[in-house]
Amino acid sequence: MKINLLAVLMIIFISITSEEAHSQENNFEQLTLQPRKVVNFPLDYKITRPRLEYPNWDHDFDQFYAYHTPILKKTQASLSFTDKGVVTTITPNSIIPHAQLDTGTIINRKEEFVGTWRMLAFRSIFFNDSVNIPTKTYYRLPDKLLDDKSNDEVFAVLTDNNFKLFAREIGKDDFKRVMSSKYKIENRRYILLYKFSKAGAGVSQIGIDENGYLILNYPKVIENVMKGEYYSYYAIIDQYIFERVK
Image 1 (cartoon, one colour):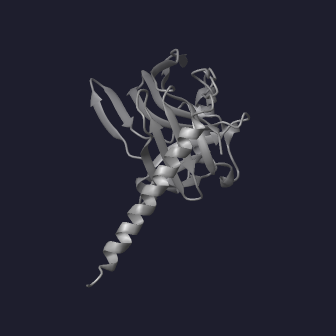
Image 2 (cartoon, one colour):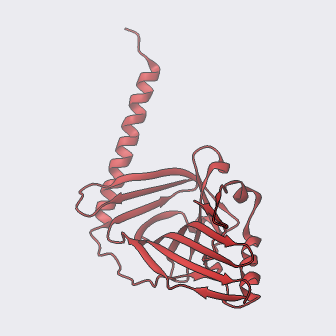
Image 3 (cartoon, one colour):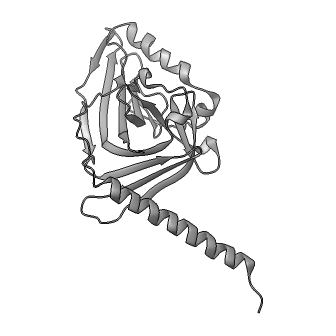
């Protein structure tokens, strides 16, 4: 009887990956037996924005460009359209929101990210700045919480070259792997998540604060511009905050 070597290898691979997933899930179950730390993070936790005065707003914003690299710039894709003189530009995954992750969270060594992290907060937050051009007057709307799923159980597992996210929704029994990808830390401040090409990567700002919390901000940006009249900057940031557990 001939043995199909490829079929045997596939069976072994499926068996190993299934055992690995089951082992990880059991590990998460054990970790959830420990009470999760409750922290009330303000909506602008570790968010830096330009000063609301001319010309400081532009000066502060322009400093963010110093962290960009050619690899990061290649990930950017925007859609623009004009309606009644207002030019709207939408960037679904932006590296240059006006609401940035605080630069004090920058990490110099990739090894500090490696480990298992338990989610403390996951929310979507709206930030808006605008300027009246003729008067050079800046405005800032109150920050707004759009969605909050902090009660879900989520674990991030980072190895040397792989990023995995496991989640269990409220009322569900099992953890599911919701993401698995390669990653690269770019310029100590960004994480690129990709399957094959970095040019097609999803980009988030990432860092670790003075409390040891891992923060991951995924920004979406909308800009409305009426030439000679006003600029309005909208940033919607999906923010994860994790605590290291392993």
